[in-house]
Amino acid sequence: MPIKKFNKILITGAAGFIGHALCKKLLEQNYTVYGLDNINDYYTVDLKYARLADIGVSRKDAEKWNVVAGSSIYENFYFVRMNLEDREKLPLLFEEQKFDAVIHLAAQAGVRYSLENPMAYVDSNLVGFVNILEACRHNKIKHLVYASSSSVYGANEKVPFAEDDRVDYPVSLYAATKKSNELMAHTYSHLYQLPTSGLRFFTVYGPWGRPDMAPMLFANAITQGKPIKVFNHGNMQRDFTYIDDIVQGIIITLNNPRPQTPDSRTQSCYQLFNIGNGSPVSLMEFIETMEHTLGKKAEKNMMEMQPGDVPRTWADTSQLNALGYESTTDIEEGVENFVKWFENYK
Image (cartoon, rainbow, N blue to C red; front, side):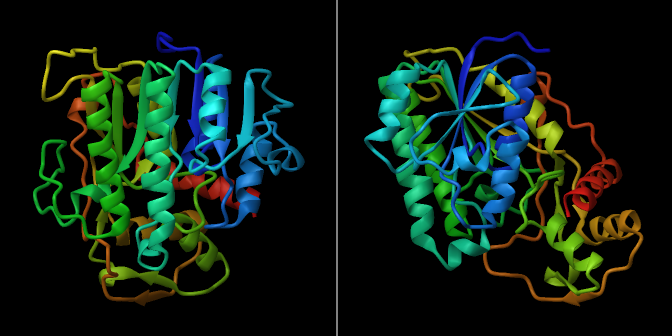
């Protein structure tokens, strides 16, 4: 167990895929955790409420707006349904609870959906993030860890992707909002000595995963005998990273803020990390692993590359590795764990 530098943690996006897993792990390590989520309907809210129930918060309690609810399982977990855009309630929550650190995972997710509903990304990923930064600044938060994305690398052809690669050419609005988050965090670290750490996530998968992501889409279609969509005719690679490895990396990052160095005009207490597996897998290999684990062949509908997609992602994780991070779950084990959960949940 890592040495705890903080005790009271706010996790935004607590009803989400990564947020749920992170809450459970921190609670097991005896942190006091406050979860925040607006439980929007980008995908089925039933899954979000099921994740919260798994941490002991009933749907009846979770549905209430701006009311802190306790957990029936963990005495050190509390949940509040709240919008990040709420410029009155969010600062009050910070003032009342006096958090030590914040892990900001809440965002409007999805690359393709950003083509259909751009304003949702502006409201959540830009306005919401500024509100988090302001609340952290005014309440002397000791460390803000926030979710960025591998999508900031855009059509970068140099592999593996490294943190110092140029990220000036995003190919989706979602990616542009994530790069904006990094720029805003840098500004607050520079101006106010707020320690910030951005994590560029690479294709996270595993139990309790999002239904709009490939593993759930594939598993649903294969088990129902329906065709799966295979974009770019299968000529794609993704740095699939198992959820437990991701959670380990977030906690390592949480406990390793960059020291405050107000005299530095370039870096200050700002840092960025890739968080991935560091070993890309072809889309066809992932599908074959899913077929083998489910014991059923997939009917494949080969399609063109979709707007906003990129053909390959591959993380250089050496900077996070230097802090003790290691992604150890291979694709066979990860898919097997996901399928076990999927069959039980369904």
